[in-house]
Length: 227
Image (cartoon, rainbow, N blue to C red; front, side, top):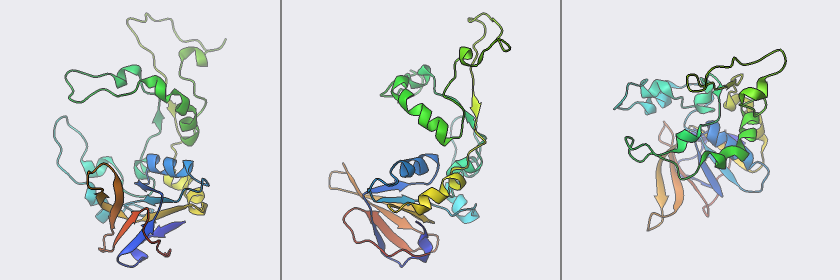
């Protein structure tokens, strides 16, 4: 079920086992993975189904460091997230992407690339790509051979292009029909409530542009659906 949070009463409380913030590629994928599981999922999306300038302006901010796009132009804040303007260019991460770089503070991942290998085929399907094959030899045949360049002088890398997949359009129906998922539009998370030690998040505070307030978390009374 997909609900417009603006249509709910002020003070609405939503009970859920899992609260996912943001209905972009990651949020929609996580919610979809829990579809039909019996786990009660609350998916909170800042915007609606289309671009809204008031909501989009929440991305405005100051940039520092290397030149980059204006923040409110680089990312999109509505159902489907930045897949709504994504070009579809896909490829697996390199091993070097996980390594610490002395000149980049806090760089380096706690896992290696191989930890992701088992999940890439599923990601390929979600992004409506071809087979998970990114080696040069995977695409060669008698009629198509890659030139034999010197490996020290030329590094070849393959990419695949998604249609591109607009997650908010492609997966909206299955999320809307899932009995254990409630997605809320115009539901901006403004605060996370934690336990005394700040070691566990208990609830998410929600506000709409019209200043309707609510909360999402386990162990609180469930609100009636509306919208």
